[in-house]
Image (cartoon, rainbow, N blue to C red; front, top):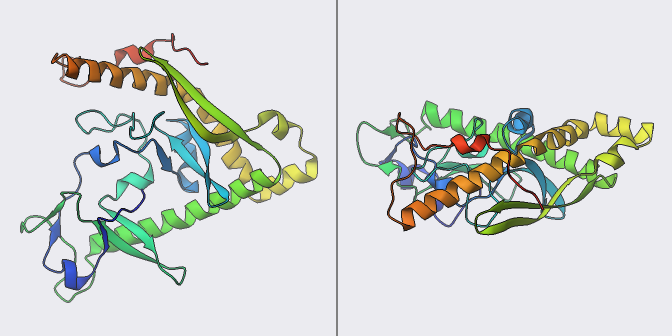
Length: 268
Protein backbone atom coordinates (compact mmCIF):
# COMPACT_ATOMS: atom_id res chain seq x y z
CA UNK A 1 0.00 0.00 0.00
CA UNK A 2 1.38 3.39 -0.97
CA UNK A 3 1.09 6.36 1.34
CA UNK A 4 -1.01 9.41 0.43
CA UNK A 5 -1.16 13.04 1.59
CA UNK A 6 -3.77 11.87 4.11
CA UNK A 7 -1.17 9.66 5.83
CA UNK A 8 0.33 11.34 8.89
CA UNK A 9 3.07 10.17 11.20
CA UNK A 10 1.54 8.63 14.28
CA UNK A 11 2.30 10.83 17.28
CA UNK A 12 1.12 11.21 20.83
CA UNK A 13 0.53 14.91 20.25
CA UNK A 14 -1.68 14.40 17.21
CA UNK A 15 -3.37 11.08 17.99
CA UNK A 16 -3.08 10.66 21.75
CA UNK A 17 -6.78 11.32 22.36
CA UNK A 18 -8.03 9.45 19.31
CA UNK A 19 -8.97 5.84 18.75
CA UNK A 20 -9.33 3.62 15.69
CA UNK A 21 -11.56 0.85 14.36
CA UNK A 22 -10.50 -2.28 12.54
CA UNK A 23 -11.40 -2.34 8.88
CA UNK A 24 -14.54 -4.14 7.74
CA UNK A 25 -14.27 -3.27 4.03
CA UNK A 26 -11.53 -3.35 1.40
CA UNK A 27 -13.06 -0.51 -0.59
CA UNK A 28 -9.90 1.50 0.15
CA UNK A 29 -8.04 -0.84 -2.25
CA UNK A 30 -10.67 -0.72 -5.00
CA UNK A 31 -8.49 1.52 -7.21
CA UNK A 32 -5.23 -0.43 -6.94
CA UNK A 33 -4.62 -2.76 -9.93
CA UNK A 34 -1.16 -3.79 -8.65
CA UNK A 35 -0.17 -4.74 -5.11
CA UNK A 36 3.47 -5.10 -3.97
CA UNK A 37 4.45 -8.47 -2.54
CA UNK A 38 6.91 -9.59 0.11
CA UNK A 39 9.06 -12.67 -0.27
CA UNK A 40 7.36 -14.44 2.62
CA UNK A 41 4.02 -14.41 0.79
CA UNK A 42 5.04 -15.24 -2.78
CA UNK A 43 4.04 -18.90 -2.64
CA UNK A 44 0.59 -18.22 -1.21
CA UNK A 45 0.00 -15.32 -3.58
CA UNK A 46 1.08 -17.40 -6.58
CA UNK A 47 -1.61 -19.94 -5.71
CA UNK A 48 -4.32 -17.29 -5.85
CA UNK A 49 -3.54 -14.56 -8.41
CA UNK A 50 -1.21 -13.63 -11.29
CA UNK A 51 2.18 -12.18 -10.38
CA UNK A 52 4.34 -9.90 -12.50
CA UNK A 53 7.33 -7.60 -12.27
CA UNK A 54 6.82 -3.83 -12.26
CA UNK A 55 9.62 -1.32 -12.91
CA UNK A 56 10.45 0.67 -9.75
CA UNK A 57 13.31 3.17 -9.36
CA UNK A 58 15.47 1.55 -12.01
CA UNK A 59 14.81 -1.97 -10.73
CA UNK A 60 11.83 -4.25 -10.38
CA UNK A 61 9.29 -5.19 -7.72
CA UNK A 62 7.19 -8.32 -7.70
CA UNK A 63 3.51 -7.41 -7.69
CA UNK A 64 0.15 -9.14 -7.63
CA UNK A 65 -1.88 -8.27 -10.72
CA UNK A 66 -5.37 -7.62 -9.38
CA UNK A 67 -6.68 -5.41 -12.18
CA UNK A 68 -6.17 -4.65 -15.86
CA UNK A 69 -6.95 -0.96 -15.94
CA UNK A 70 -5.97 2.03 -13.85
CA UNK A 71 -8.23 2.74 -10.93
CA UNK A 72 -9.80 -0.69 -10.52
CA UNK A 73 -8.98 -3.69 -8.35
CA UNK A 74 -10.99 -6.65 -9.60
CA UNK A 75 -10.60 -8.51 -6.31
CA UNK A 76 -12.68 -5.94 -4.42
CA UNK A 77 -16.43 -6.53 -4.72
CA UNK A 78 -18.84 -3.60 -5.09
CA UNK A 79 -19.76 -4.03 -1.42
CA UNK A 80 -16.11 -3.90 -0.32
CA UNK A 81 -15.54 -7.62 0.22
CA UNK A 82 -12.25 -9.21 -0.83
CA UNK A 83 -12.97 -11.83 -3.50
CA UNK A 84 -9.64 -13.65 -3.56
CA UNK A 85 -8.56 -16.69 -1.59
CA UNK A 86 -5.41 -14.84 -0.45
CA UNK A 87 -5.16 -11.31 0.97
CA UNK A 88 -1.80 -9.62 0.24
CA UNK A 89 0.09 -8.37 3.27
CA UNK A 90 0.05 -4.79 1.99
CA UNK A 91 -3.70 -4.61 2.71
CA UNK A 92 -3.88 -6.30 6.09
CA UNK A 93 -2.86 -3.43 8.36
CA UNK A 94 -4.89 -0.58 6.91
CA UNK A 95 -5.21 2.26 7.93
CA UNK A 96 -1.56 1.94 8.99
CA UNK A 97 1.56 1.94 6.81
CA UNK A 98 5.27 2.62 7.11
CA UNK A 99 6.84 5.72 5.65
CA UNK A 100 10.61 6.02 5.04
CA UNK A 101 12.72 8.46 7.01
CA UNK A 102 16.03 10.08 6.01
CA UNK A 103 18.18 7.64 8.01
CA UNK A 104 17.00 4.47 6.27
CA UNK A 105 14.52 3.94 9.07
CA UNK A 106 10.73 3.78 8.86
CA UNK A 107 7.97 5.31 10.94
CA UNK A 108 4.38 4.27 11.47
CA UNK A 109 1.77 6.48 9.86
CA UNK A 110 -2.02 6.38 9.68
CA UNK A 111 -4.46 7.31 6.92
CA UNK A 112 -6.61 9.97 8.54
CA UNK A 113 -9.02 9.91 5.59
CA UNK A 114 -9.79 6.22 6.09
CA UNK A 115 -12.93 6.80 8.13
CA UNK A 116 -11.53 4.45 10.76
CA UNK A 117 -10.39 7.06 13.30
CA UNK A 118 -12.85 7.78 16.09
CA UNK A 119 -13.42 9.15 19.56
CA UNK A 120 -15.60 6.24 20.67
CA UNK A 121 -14.51 4.54 23.92
CA UNK A 122 -15.21 1.05 22.57
CA UNK A 123 -12.62 1.47 19.80
CA UNK A 124 -8.88 0.73 20.01
CA UNK A 125 -6.42 3.15 21.57
CA UNK A 126 -3.36 4.36 19.70
CA UNK A 127 -1.38 4.88 22.89
CA UNK A 128 -1.33 3.57 26.43
CA UNK A 129 -1.87 5.90 29.39
CA UNK A 130 1.88 6.38 29.77
CA UNK A 131 2.31 7.41 26.13
CA UNK A 132 3.68 4.14 24.74
CA UNK A 133 2.21 2.54 21.64
CA UNK A 134 -0.61 0.14 22.43
CA UNK A 135 0.31 -3.57 22.27
CA UNK A 136 -1.83 -3.92 19.14
CA UNK A 137 0.02 -1.14 17.34
CA UNK A 138 3.37 -2.51 18.46
CA UNK A 139 2.40 -5.77 16.76
CA UNK A 140 1.34 -3.91 13.61
CA UNK A 141 4.60 -1.94 13.57
CA UNK A 142 6.64 -5.13 13.89
CA UNK A 143 4.63 -6.87 11.18
CA UNK A 144 4.96 -3.98 8.74
CA UNK A 145 8.70 -3.87 9.43
CA UNK A 146 9.01 -7.55 8.56
CA UNK A 147 6.99 -7.05 5.36
CA UNK A 148 9.14 -4.09 4.33
CA UNK A 149 12.36 -6.04 4.86
CA UNK A 150 11.00 -9.04 2.99
CA UNK A 151 9.90 -6.84 0.11
CA UNK A 152 13.42 -5.42 -0.12
CA UNK A 153 14.79 -8.96 -0.33
CA UNK A 154 12.46 -9.65 -3.25
CA UNK A 155 13.79 -6.53 -4.93
CA UNK A 156 17.29 -7.97 -4.76
CA UNK A 157 16.08 -11.26 -6.24
CA UNK A 158 14.40 -9.32 -9.05
CA UNK A 159 17.68 -7.49 -9.68
CA UNK A 160 19.42 -10.86 -10.08
CA UNK A 161 16.82 -11.98 -12.62
CA UNK A 162 17.23 -8.71 -14.48
CA UNK A 163 21.03 -9.00 -14.47
CA UNK A 164 20.81 -12.41 -16.14
CA UNK A 165 18.41 -11.13 -18.81
CA UNK A 166 15.48 -13.20 -17.59
CA UNK A 167 12.74 -10.54 -17.54
CA UNK A 168 10.76 -9.81 -20.69
CA UNK A 169 7.91 -7.36 -21.39
CA UNK A 170 4.46 -8.82 -20.74
CA UNK A 171 1.31 -7.23 -22.07
CA UNK A 172 -1.76 -8.69 -20.36
CA UNK A 173 -4.90 -8.54 -22.47
CA UNK A 174 -8.27 -9.86 -21.35
CA UNK A 175 -11.57 -9.76 -23.19
CA UNK A 176 -14.93 -8.63 -21.88
CA UNK A 177 -18.16 -7.48 -23.51
CA UNK A 178 -16.70 -4.01 -24.15
CA UNK A 179 -13.65 -5.42 -25.91
CA UNK A 180 -10.04 -6.07 -24.90
CA UNK A 181 -8.66 -4.67 -21.68
CA UNK A 182 -4.89 -4.31 -21.74
CA UNK A 183 -2.36 -3.78 -19.00
CA UNK A 184 1.04 -2.74 -20.30
CA UNK A 185 4.39 -1.98 -18.74
CA UNK A 186 4.75 -5.21 -16.77
CA UNK A 187 7.35 -7.96 -17.14
CA UNK A 188 7.39 -11.74 -16.76
CA UNK A 189 10.07 -14.41 -16.51
CA UNK A 190 11.50 -15.55 -19.84
CA UNK A 191 11.07 -19.27 -19.23
CA UNK A 192 13.02 -20.32 -22.30
CA UNK A 193 16.00 -18.20 -21.24
CA UNK A 194 15.76 -19.56 -17.69
CA UNK A 195 15.84 -23.14 -18.91
CA UNK A 196 18.99 -22.55 -20.98
CA UNK A 197 21.04 -20.73 -18.33
CA UNK A 198 24.57 -22.01 -17.79
CA UNK A 199 25.00 -24.02 -14.61
CA UNK A 200 27.05 -21.31 -12.91
CA UNK A 201 24.41 -18.63 -13.53
CA UNK A 202 21.62 -20.98 -12.42
CA UNK A 203 23.45 -21.69 -9.18
CA UNK A 204 23.97 -17.96 -8.58
CA UNK A 205 20.22 -17.41 -8.93
CA UNK A 206 19.54 -20.19 -6.46
CA UNK A 207 21.87 -18.65 -3.90
CA UNK A 208 20.14 -15.26 -4.28
CA UNK A 209 16.66 -16.81 -3.83
CA UNK A 210 15.78 -15.52 -7.29
CA UNK A 211 14.67 -18.97 -8.47
CA UNK A 212 11.86 -18.98 -5.90
CA UNK A 213 10.63 -15.66 -7.27
CA UNK A 214 10.94 -16.83 -10.88
CA UNK A 215 9.04 -20.08 -10.40
CA UNK A 216 6.34 -18.38 -8.33
CA UNK A 217 5.73 -15.90 -11.14
CA UNK A 218 5.61 -18.59 -13.79
CA UNK A 219 3.25 -20.74 -11.75
CA UNK A 220 0.93 -17.82 -11.04
CA UNK A 221 0.18 -17.14 -14.69
CA UNK A 222 -2.45 -19.88 -14.62
CA UNK A 223 -4.70 -17.41 -12.75
CA UNK A 224 -5.11 -15.06 -15.70
CA UNK A 225 -8.35 -16.82 -16.59
CA UNK A 226 -9.74 -16.18 -13.09
CA UNK A 227 -8.72 -12.53 -13.44
CA UNK A 228 -10.66 -12.39 -16.69
CA UNK A 229 -13.70 -13.91 -14.97
CA UNK A 230 -13.54 -11.21 -12.32
CA UNK A 231 -13.30 -8.61 -15.08
CA UNK A 232 -16.57 -9.90 -16.53
CA UNK A 233 -18.14 -9.99 -13.05
CA UNK A 234 -17.41 -6.33 -12.51
CA UNK A 235 -18.64 -5.47 -16.01
CA UNK A 236 -21.93 -7.22 -15.28
CA UNK A 237 -22.18 -5.45 -11.93
CA UNK A 238 -21.62 -2.07 -13.59
CA UNK A 239 -24.23 -2.84 -16.24
CA UNK A 240 -26.72 -3.92 -13.59
CA UNK A 241 -26.11 -0.72 -11.64
CA UNK A 242 -26.52 1.39 -14.76
CA UNK A 243 -29.77 -0.36 -15.62
CA UNK A 244 -30.94 -0.17 -11.98
CA UNK A 245 -31.22 -3.95 -11.88
CA UNK A 246 -30.30 -5.97 -8.79
CA UNK A 247 -26.89 -7.65 -8.89
CA UNK A 248 -26.89 -11.43 -9.41
CA UNK A 249 -26.69 -13.06 -6.00
CA UNK A 250 -26.67 -16.57 -4.60
CA UNK A 251 -29.43 -17.86 -2.30
CA UNK A 252 -27.15 -16.90 0.60
CA UNK A 253 -26.99 -13.28 -0.56
CA UNK A 254 -23.43 -13.25 -1.94
CA UNK A 255 -22.38 -11.93 -5.33
CA UNK A 256 -22.93 -14.76 -7.82
CA UNK A 257 -19.57 -15.58 -9.41
CA UNK A 258 -20.57 -18.98 -10.78
CA UNK A 259 -19.66 -17.89 -14.29
CA UNK A 260 -16.01 -17.88 -13.16
CA UNK A 261 -16.08 -21.59 -13.94
CA UNK A 262 -16.41 -20.80 -17.64
CA UNK A 263 -13.44 -21.60 -19.88
CA UNK A 264 -14.44 -19.26 -22.71
CA UNK A 265 -12.08 -16.44 -21.82
CA UNK A 266 -10.05 -15.34 -24.84
CA UNK A 267 -6.56 -13.85 -24.69
CA UNK A 268 -5.00 -11.74 -27.43
